[in-house]
Amino acid sequence: MRRFAIVSLLAFSLSAPATAQDTEDAERLAEQGLAKILQALDLLMKTIPQYAAPEVRPNGDIIIRRLHPEDEPPRKPRKEDDEPSDGTDT
Image 1 (cartoon, rainbow, N blue to C red):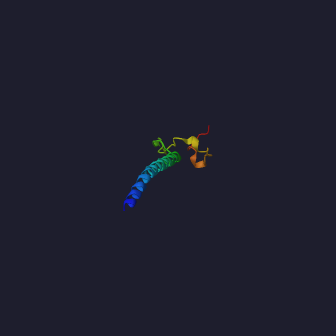
Image 2: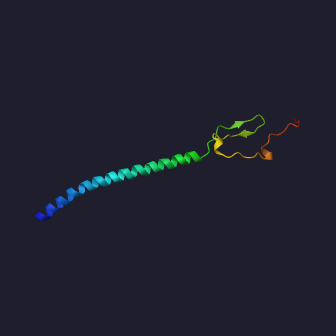
Image 3: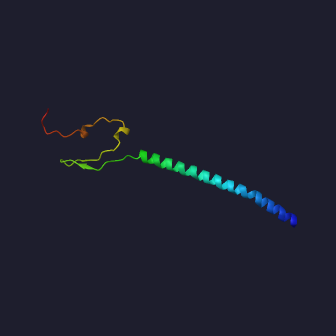
């Protein structure tokens, strides 16, 4: 019985530092995981287009401009996108 108590005490004392090391590893892994989540959220926010406040023109058109249009390739205007003419050619 005495031998069992000594072995148990020895085993318990040797396992305590391993538990502290496991805790440090868990904290390190949690920190790395949190950093990856924050990087993913930052990337998500950069990919979502951001828009300015809507602008209403006198003719009733509503324009909502992108705040960072340089991120998109230039597009060729279609016929519908052209401003309506007032009938006079310049």
